[in-house]
Image 1 (cartoon, rainbow, N blue to C red):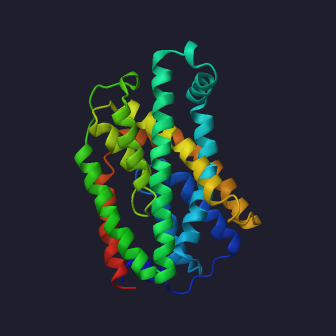
Image 2 (cartoon, rainbow, N blue to C red):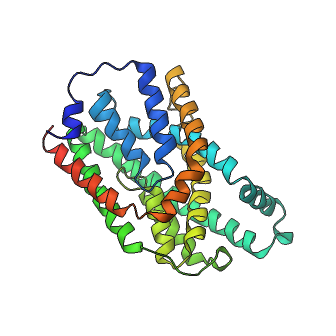
Length: 280
């Protein structure tokens, strides 16, 4: 019997505790290349058994990303301050900040177009045939395997710095981030791997990956959640715990992620998820 099959057995968890757990999971998994969105979907579908559509859970996961967005904003505040300064005073900014600002603008536009398109495709598919928890679990497991293979291929980066960013890098990274709108694809896993494959060094890859997440998360919530998501007490509690645990763990887990290749963990997680989908 799989781990999620066991979880299908009656477990009494209060709605408040469910919201707290979701916030903690988002706060911790956001900094690791394991797809925090997939973790939330799997838990909602297989443990909490909430009667929500996949698109509704994706909207909830995106909302919870606002908690880790605020945590990342605090952690990367110096970079954010320089970038905002560059936007309002571009000519006097240093060359690297100009490169990063241009990179973020182009990659965000590309990822926004791709991500929104993929989300609309998902909505259309759901309207034709509702996605069951079993199918969602199987698909996420298969896509986790793809994520794992990409991470394992990336390995170590090169010597390129942020000052060497090009328009081609911006488009490639925008595509990578946009594809991560699909549950099972890790945003950080895809973007960090793409940057490493483009021969950026490890520190630059992590820094750029999480800078990319800031406008993507904010823009995604404005477009998808501004009029569609209920600001219930439960959702706000989840958001609070996402922020608190995100802020508490970001430095430690980003350091850990630089030293460990999570491709093997994601590969194992994907295999277990697929096996579980065949048993539940």
